Length: 295
Image 1: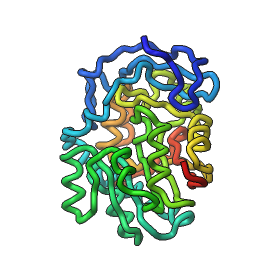
Image 2: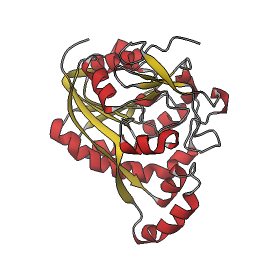
Image 3: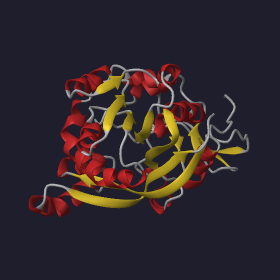
Image 4: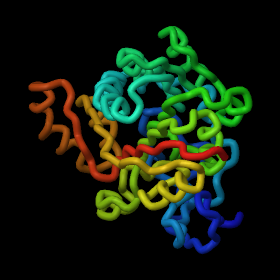
């Protein structure tokens, strides 16, 4: 067993939270739910900064995204666009113009909306299939890792966004250093991820929806602030991510829960009345910070 050194603060004062119950070969790296979707690698918790992470972390897990074809994802792009239209006015308050880089941009829905809000937009996406969609929208997309992009570009971006991305990083400290290099001084960093310290996480325990084999980092508000502070970022604000659901997206999201059919039957009439509903769920962290110094 490899050392359980915290991937955020470096402390070795950690303890096992959950044992492993999945193998990487059985994981789906798409929106398609499988019997293994809620299963995880061994996870430990840091007593110093409260961060939770997989240990040992699967090496080069990012390679699983390079050839992913996720047609299921295309069913939910409307939800992503509506969420973007709710998030972008908040971003406007902190950076009213400039160049946005969306890391893990998928098929480019957020970038489309950001362009409509007057920003210049670029994306970074490992999946060949997804990045081809972005290209066809006339948006520049880099199909490479942050480390590779940061070697070529410095101080270019006014805003960098990571929506549902940071929990997939093998080494979040190193990745934030690359992000810092890519941002202009004072540039804005926006992160959406789950909050381990939220009451849904505490109430649901291992049944919390963020427990997934694809996720190898599980942040609390405290551990995300710690990571940001020691990576050259100042915390500005934390809000709740506007989760916009269609009936199909909600059905897919609840597929791991036995009460899914009862819930979906109960709420079906509401979706006949309105196609999308927005939920502000505690624990869905939408974190804002600014770059304060060079790393």
